[in-house]
Amino acid sequence: MVYAAIITIGDEILYGQTLDTNAHFISGELDKIGIKVKLRLSVGDQSSDILQALDTARNSCDIILTTGGLGPTRDDITKRTLCAYFGVELARNEDALRDVENFFNKRGIVMNELNQMQALLPTGSKKITNSMGTAPGIWMEWNKKVYISMPGVPHELEHMLPVMVIPMIRQNFVTPVIYHKSIMTAGIGESILAEKIKDWETGLPENIKLAYLPGYGLVKLRLSAFGNDRDVLQQQVSQYTGELQKIAGEHIYGYDELSLEQKVGDLLREQKETLAVAESCTGGYLSHAITSVPGSSDYFTGGIIAYQNKLKVEELKVSESTLRQEGAVSEKTVKEMAEGIRKKFSAGWGVAISGIAGPGGGTHDKPVGTVWIGLSGKEFTEARKYNFAKNRINNIRYASVAALTFLWQRLKEKN
Ligand code: ATP
Image 1: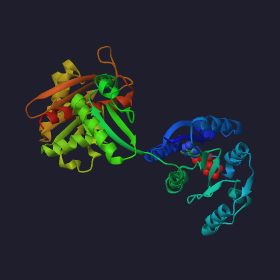
Image 2 (image 1 turned 60 degrees about the vertical axis):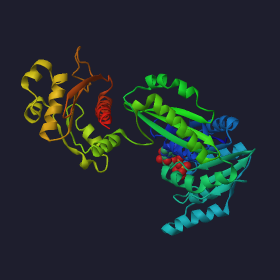
Image 3 (image 1 turned 90 degrees about the vertical axis):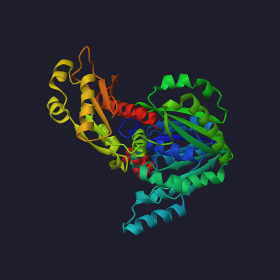
Image 4 (image 1 turned 180 degrees about the vertical axis):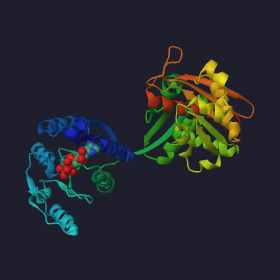
């Protein structure tokens, strides 16, 4: 196994002004070639902090990648620190100078002294071409480790890493084959799922790792298998996903990056069914999710955002007495809404959501996060109550996913 450390350099990352997208991107690219990222560190523009991070990283890793602080705007902090670390000097790299000159010539700009300094690299290092900017990257082999410095500007890094750096890493290291498979579940919480599959998880072989990746109301299980032969790994993973299917199949709606709205759409299309939606507290969020799937016009007839009670009565035929006696967030109201929208749009299925998204509007009986979801089919109308107890946007997200889960569970019963 080859281990890597990522050090992102820049005060703005520590102050919360810049989201560290570079570390995220590098992790993803290294993962693709089977290099295990063991450590991610962020440090400010301080030489002493960078040196400490380099020490920590080299203790356990073979490749140390840094981003940021390469160009003159930060006084070349990374380059100067690397020189101090390796005990070398900065020297003009003719190859790098040619790149910088070309960059400016192409744009018809006269190069200044600061730009010329971009061509100064630690002696003994190799230049990594930066086709998107002026600060070249640095490849340095020192004490049996490889140090790679790349620019902080995300679009420069995102070009340099896959195009220049990854091929160099592949030439210098024997990397294992890594095979991922994601198993998408709905309608079950992470801890209950973990309990249910714990024996299966314990029985996984050493070379297959399991990760729980919970999202809003959904849990993705990711299996990562390491080895030398892709076909063997694929077979091995398929054996274990088959076993999982037997244990937790009722909660698995699909594999890899399939979204729940996509799965619901596929089932509706297969069953030649249609869907209409009546949303109150989600304000169109569910309809947005459904229509984010290309081709959703095959099965989605449309929706109404019946936010005020007046509209629930006029458009969805919810009875005034239901609203008066039970309130807008109630079993009876969402059932009438679901049935109302199904009939209004002549759809096979009607889904309705009514709840208290917050932060205001909660009561003792119906606290913020209380959501009723109604589902009306040709043969029955039913409703479920949830309490998400989250903040406004998360109550909205969870409610939309819960509505999709409810519908998916009923649709798969028909398959
Ligand atoms: P210079 O800009 O001095 O030429 P550089 O190319 O190494 O050097 P930085 O100055 O460190 O890059 O950063 C340039 C820009 O990239 C800044 O806007 C910074 O906020 C952004 N940036 C730096 N590090 C990261 C990171 N880890 N994730 C996302 N953006 C980053």
